[in-house]
Structures are given as structure tokens and as C-alpha cells.
Amino acid sequence: MAKEIERKFLVKTSGWRAAAKDATAISQFYVSAGEDRSVRVRIVDGEKAKLTIKFGGAARARDEFEYPIPLADARDLLRFALGNVVEKTRHKVAHGGREYDVDTFEGALAGLVIAELETPDDVPDEELPDWLGDEVTGDRAFYNLSLALEGAP
Image (spheres, rainbow, N blue to C red):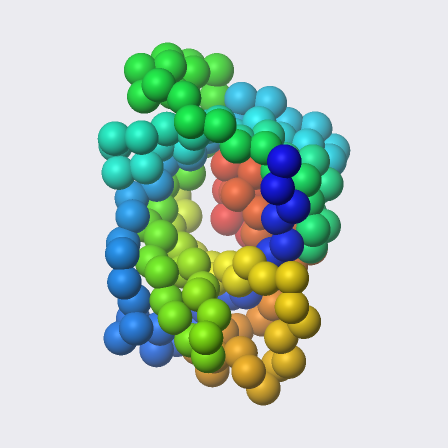
């Protein structure tokens, strides 16, 4: 089991694009969800799949279990999806010695851009990139589960 310690931010400008590397296409959906837990299937670049189980709701630190699964199984599980499939492209962006994941959403969520920073450190605001907007850590409306079940906030 891993402990996921993550901060989430809205992205207010395209200043991150110059440093972006390794764009990855992600298609993900949920097959089970509760108040403080979820089971997600993620297909990456149409080639690999993972099953992820998270406990802890919208807390900054959550318990996470992740396992590779056969791509055929992931595609078969799609028929059990709750809500909508979330389509996004994830960009790796380095800033200040840290790596941010910047997700640009597609489909019904087009226009939404969210940055995630996974770190156990308390990063002072002055060390955050200026292209970040409001912090939405802990705001359920911006978690992928809510986006799948309820759409854009």
C-alpha cells in the first residue's frame, strides 16, 4: 500500500506548457464509489490498464492500492462504469525541483485544467509556479470521481 499525499490546483494560465513533457492519454472510470472510497479503472495510452482502490475521500493524504490488469479486462469493466468516462491528457511539468501533473480534460470537461503535486512536503506558496490558480485540495467537486459522476463544477 502506498500513501498518496497530493495537492490539487486549478490552472489559470498556459505558462506551464513550455516546460511540459511526456503527454499521456488517460481514460478512466469508476466501478465502485462510497463516501470515503473508490475503485477506479484507468487505461493509459490505450495500451496499459490499472485498477486503483483509494480510501480517504477528499483528504490530502489517502491510502492507495494500485494493480496492473489486462487491457481486455479493463475494457470489459467499462460496462460497469458509474457515471461518465473521464478523458484527459496528463503532462509532466517540472518546476522548482518538483514534478507537477497537469491534466487537460476533454469531452464534457473540455476547458478544465487541473495541476496535481504529490509530495509529503509543505511547499510554501512562494515556491509554487505562477501559472497555478486556486488550490482545490479537499474540494470534492474537483476530484475525478466527482467529475465522472457529476460533471464539471
